[in-house]
Length: 261
Ligand SMILES: NC(=O)c1ccc[n+]([C@@H]2O[C@H](COP(=O)([O-])OP(=O)(O)OC[C@H]3O[C@@H](n4cnc5c(N)ncnc54)[C@H](O)[C@@H]3O)[C@@H](O)[C@H]2O)c1
Image 1 (cartoon, rainbow, N blue to C red):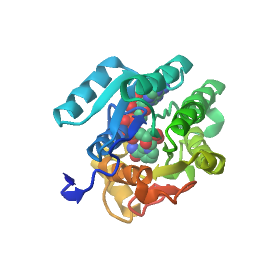
Image 2: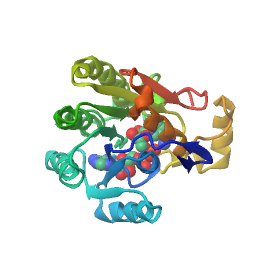
Image 3: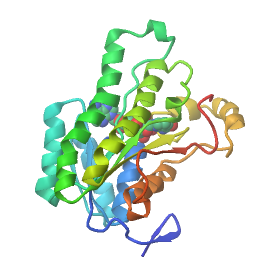
Image 4: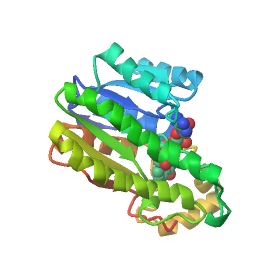
């Protein structure tokens, strides 16, 4: 047993190896930390070496079993390197958390360009699928595994001014549903996390200004912004034996709010 956020929890991921993309900060870092606290050996990754190093230093200081490498999820060579690194360092892969995402555009959909769409579709959707395709055979070698795809409540109903990003998050809900039945034969479960408003750099425009946040709070069920750690425990649960009969599902972590923020 160990204490996580004041709660005594068993090390339910002992012996598992986890890959988490974009895990040097924000929700990805919180997920990496929680999977490691729950006993997994975790490979963190991010586009910049200095960010990987900073996160590694922080997590290792906490006594967690983590390694790290650079991975731009849009680059095939980086995706291959990430998976190879996990196999070399930790002996295989049991868990993948696909968390990286971009949003290069705010505004009316009809003003978005082909370049915007290419970037959003490449990073948010295509890279997720291609990583799944790479890790699935590695998971199969170890008798199965668990994949968690990070979508958003914007995937259910699009955020105003974030059309292309929201559509990419809707696609991830579909990707989860489409992959899950195909991978059950390999004992690989595929689930999805749909966060609401969570305090990270990504969402800072919505919470740094107190007056903007106050307006948003009115629309939230639990009248405060969520913290990255409040997403992490759910991901750990989805990857654990406690979720052994759950696949193809999306868990919404939004304090009861919806995407009409
Ligand atoms: N914060 C929120 O309110 C919120 C709400 C719903 C969904 N999400 C989702 O949660 C996930 C994590 O977001 P976050 O809020 O922690 O913000 P974040 O900005 O910390 O996370 C996004 C991360 O993706 C990384 N990234 C972008 N392009 C990449 C690439 N090509 N390769 C590797 N990494 C890349 C960024 O560097 C960044 O670290 C994202 O998928 C985001 O869409 C966040």
